Image (cartoon, rainbow, N blue to C red):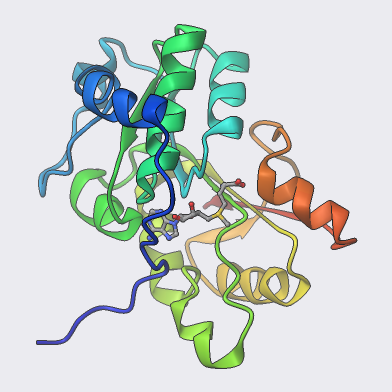
Length: 217
Ligand SMILES: C[S@@+](CC[C@H](N)C(=O)[O-])C[C@H]1O[C@@H](n2cnc3c(N)ncnc32)[C@H](O)[C@@H]1O
């Protein structure tokens, strides 16, 4: 059987007691189980509002901050790493955020199976794993096929906001998204970002942080 190349390696990592409790007790409330069928965001959030999908939300710092700053939009965060999902669930409960749900699954499958075409006001892709070694470049999430998939899921005028501290991944993303016929460069972002662990680390190492904005034609 052909196994698809994944953009992540599932490391067990340490799950704290609080994260574990969140996965057990809060996931039923704020989590969405993966399902191979389209979701209806109106039913999930009980309203019709712009829908934002965040890919690889990590520990969820940015997700929670943006969702708090933008109560008129709804957010679905997708992350495969259990401790990160637990951490975001705890933030959602602590901040009383009614506009965030979390999916613990591969974002490519979530986009393909769960998100209807044209459903998204924005996609956030903040500090995707850079896979810096040349022989690992094939694991990078951003490839032509991903760009086409992401573009199709955006509503016309919807924004794709990506950020990275790896100059060569920034160049790569710029050219891959730039070559996608459904996308065009966009002048500004839908929202601001708040500094995450990865952004802070990049800055500490002196890496330039690049934000890329495209929008669906
Ligand atoms: C370098 S971290 C950045 C996390 C966060 N966005 C930040 O800025 O701190 C990349 C994250 O993407 C997640 N990830 C990578 N590929 C993914 C995929 N296909 N689906 C869901 N999550 C993915 C990883 O588990 C990891 O938590």
